[in-house]
Image (cartoon, rainbow, N blue to C red; front, side, top):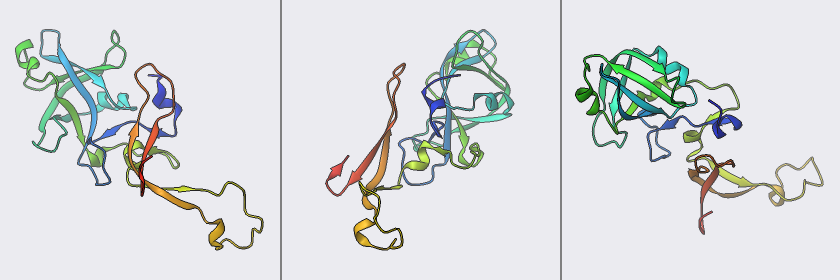
Length: 187
């Protein structure tokens, strides 16, 4: 799966939205689109940069990551990445054996506990990890004297705190933008 997310040092696996500085409980990995086939499978839009791990899961949680209701634990019979529909996975939940049963999952989200989030290599970050970080502005010119790192005139100035991330639209290339809350409002 090659898209804008693969071009950046951070990854787009989505933690419980809306993004906040608080540790989320759930990681959003897919959104169920519709029933698929006649054996109770569902087609889902993949929302993780690590789709191959979905095929190795034995259970997921299904619901809405809105914090209002606890997601439901669902053992998996199987999961595979769709060969016909790029960016989609097919989930077959244990105990769901018909189209009508599968239809009840339409619009729900496939979640994993936050503790099961993928461990990234050093220097790479999840987008959700950026929320709450401080943003500093470096001086326009390098310091003249390198031996005075404590000089206030040369210290980076605090701009604000990251409150959100705006992504380019579907099919539009571009760099995600950080929403920074400053003393003068959002930047």
